[in-house]
Image (cartoon, rainbow, N blue to C red; front, side, top):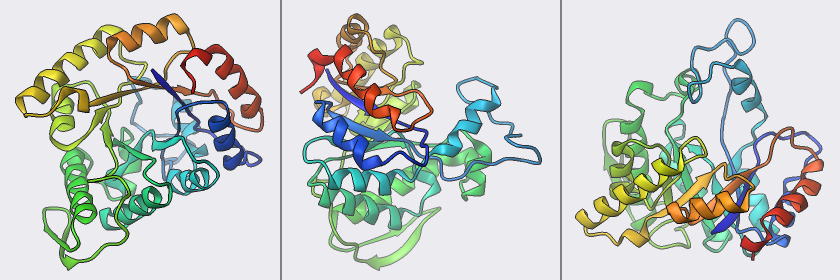
Length: 290
């Protein structure tokens, strides 16, 4: 199993380029950053109704405010590394204009020489999504259109689109991604709808540590079956797990369940101490490093 690193909460003194260099130098496979563009506060700090993974703890919302723009930070990371994959864990795609996002991703993939992976999320925080213009109750439909638009721009010299959410005449978008036909697209979630979306629109699944080994193994089986029905090679559907534990025995069990890449999340707060923590993590999982 390949192993990557994910960080979420940034203290001002943390230099992203130092972290990216360290991740690559220690032999990790990849470096990942999440996305929350804004954090709604309500009349009182963090007074929102949405809950995350059935958790009502307002601190879950509060800590999201320490996220940086993943695309800018990953571009900086790509500039100081040569090997590691860089990815979003995840990007809230329906909160973006797809014409703008398509160019940002193409540029990032172009200059990183094909090292970008797009992890896609619909967004669990209704209040945030609505502030950003998301049709929250139909956010999959909006996300699907956004992805369709980006694929058209990535794979055609000229493209037009006429949908429910996005409508534009014939245009040209430059540059094109280094990866063909486009960077891999991974989706999270555990319902059969999600698995069908992966087969129809994506390249892989992003389960989390919230899912059990049994759920992950069952998901791999479902993906294989759906891929065969869609005349896709099941081996072309990747499985990258967010929140991989730092336990070799558990890592081997997740690998047997079908995970081919695990992402270890570093606990907040994220200051300069992350650089020392990365060395400790590397020592625990060294047999899986490059």
